[in-house]
Image 1: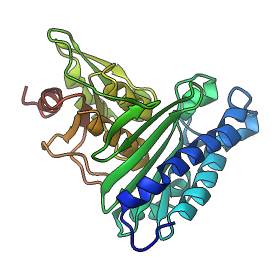
Image 2 (image 1 turned 120 degrees about the vertical axis):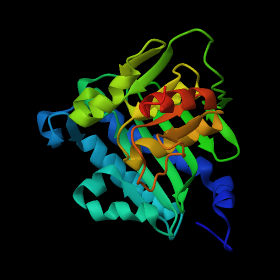
Image 3 (image 1 turned 120 degrees about the horizontal axis):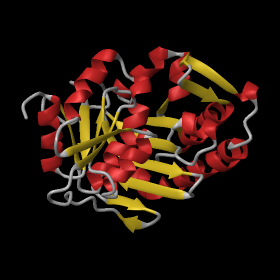
Length: 281
């Protein structure tokens, strides 16, 4: 718990390992035992056939909510499944209390299919600033972490995105067509141009990790849900990358962004993608 009015940074210095342990335990107890073993009654639809939720999502989020709120008294939790049940709870991201932002299974469709491309995302934010993040891919047992000002790491090794290779098409992961409106699809069509190789994204969290590792050059996403972006955006920043909306401003987890937006492995790539999205290239 926070003691003697310690700062978020001081809390993280004492408890970052406890958060990591909670993320790993949530996956070990609630997610992986259900991977490739889901019964039909453990999978439901939310907004439609592509928007799935499973017992693993619900139970992992409940576990993390209990443990993380207990670690940091006075904090609040904004989790994807809780917000689905009570949309008003999303407003806590704009409040004064420290907020844990949780996506228990990012890439639920891949999880349901029995594929490895899913992860658990946790971020700690305060007054709109993300201070720390955890991206855990349990099927691969790979954990990426970031603390603002202290760098990004994958399994303990420092991440550095670096600039793209000169002369090669930019590899850009974009919002998946199954989750975009016709207007959003049109906005992203501008990336189908010489010098850019767009493709539909999988798990947003793993796409951000790919940018932070320099395996992908950028993302172009058309939705704002903070649980999909908060952890990954900090990971990219701390690996030396950046993120911009079409107005040239950083993406705000509190919302009201000009979409689509990009996260890229370096500033030049971010500006190039934004110029395309803004019709200026």
